[in-house]
Amino acid sequence: MLKHAEAKFFFPHWRIFQQIVSSNCQSNGFWMKMALLYSIVSQAAEWTDPLLFLRVCAAGLVAVVTVWTVRLLVCHAWYTHRLSRFNKPQTHSWLLGHMGQMQSTEEGLLQVDDLVQTYKHSCSWFLGPFYHLVRVFHPDYVKPLLMASANITVKDELIYGHLRPWLGQSLLLSSGEKWFRKRRLLTPAFHFEILKNYAAIFNSSTNTMHEKWRHLAAEGNKNLEMFDHVTLMTLDSLLKCAFSHSSNCQESTSDYVAAIVELSDLIIDRRLKILHHWDWIYWKTQQGKQFKQALNVVHRFTREVVQKRRALIDQQRETGVQSSHTKTPKRNKDFVDILLLSKDEDGHGLTDEEILAEANTFMFAGHDTTASAICWTLYNLANHAHYQEKCRQEVMELMKGRDEHEIEWEDLSNLPFTTMCIRESLRLHSPVQAVTRKYTQDMQLPGDLTVPEGAICLVSIYGTHHNPVVWTNPHEFNPLRFDPTNKESHSSHAFIPFSSGPRNCIGQKFAMAELRVVVALTLLRFRLTLGVNPELGSKSGRVRRLPQLVLRAEGGLWLELEPLLDE
Image 1 (cartoon, rainbow, N blue to C red):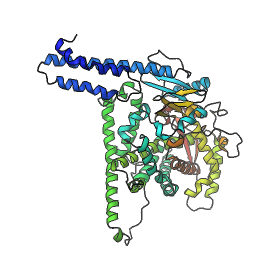
Image 2 (tube, rainbow, N blue to C red; image 1 turned 120 degrees about the vertical axis):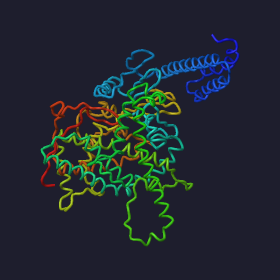
Image 3 (tube, rainbow, N blue to C red; image 1 turned 60 degrees about the horizontal axis):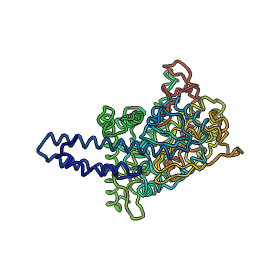
Image 4 (cartoon, helix red, strand yellow; image 1 turned 180 degrees about the horizontal axis):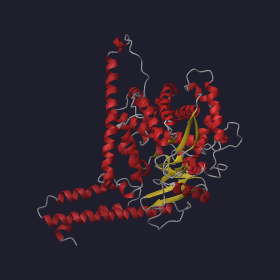
């Protein structure tokens, strides 16, 4: 019990805590009110009686924990009631919900298949009293969520919060007016006139990878793990497209590239450990310290590039007249150039910190997703020799009569069957398995269902792409689904590998261009068959999928590559 002197000081503030407990779950002022406790303790620190000071601090801590716990349980009960009309898979308990049931493994994907078979379109999901989700996996339920106005759409902290230290307030993570402004400023960076210049880079990076493969094959090593090679190739491409930087990372080590790979792995590890979701715990762990070290490497590299490029652009502006008479070869604009030169309607551009965030996001979002899409496309074609041969014949026909085998921008529209195979692979093995959203108002779904404001909406790309109500034989690889002459029609939101709506992937045309270049050149130069995982000693025909930040394969994705003598 508090003594009289302590109670006289402390209890006048108790009404604040009562108001907090009774306040609506959506109140944004909770932590502001909690700051009052800090004020109380700060005043207590001026007392001369150390025992009294400690007792007041202890009472304050108990009050914080009590109020936080009560409010958490009240919110949990409120969301449980609001989501009661949704089907709910069996839980461990009312409090724990589905904690521990969401797995980033092959079994986790099979679990989604079971949910789709059982509930057809949606279900509710609780991760303890902390996170309240609605999982949707039918186009009719996906559409109103993804097509909602960007004004009411927010990226939640469960999936995206761990990216903020790396990506800052970038387009991927921002909302409201900040998002609108950045989307307008970044859209020109993905105009086809800019993307055309990147085709040569895609060819060059792919050529480097293929040279490595030829050397390995000549040494008798034709059995290769795809993700290791293709991820380095996409990083090589992105560094050239984003920064005009030749890292040579496919043939030698790069601290920057190693740091990006490490950050991705650490984010996956953090997501799986619920206690690490709180920053004040995570930054004290060994993994948190490793994250900060890798983050320093990535941010330092990007910041130096941005600052040097801004200085160069400013210098060129000052000496514009003189430089117009020089014979310096003109360099194509890269991603950073475009960001530095972009202006909004008021004539304001992006700050260095904003450009840093967007450049880091371009590297993060562009390398792993595209690498996953390339690897799974090659795997599916290795697993279906007749489709592989049909793609190869299409590419050979395109290259007929050319001295150099390079895929040009104009060629991309002349690879219809190869594109169909890529799209089917994106359906069957979508790099990103789900996207999540929160909304600042209640969202109406078919069947008179309502997602309450603040709940997390998990749009299952995997579930939608494998929903038997939507796709016939959804687990089979059949590129003819995407034949333009195919009479079978699908909802506009049945195929969403790049999400959809106002917050869809801004770089999807970039990704599709790189995919077509890499796949076409690979089929032109190599015949692909299923390889052998050395650890398992078996063919990779039945791989165990590994849904992490992107879809990978347990133990890697092994293919055997036979060089073709005549390209």
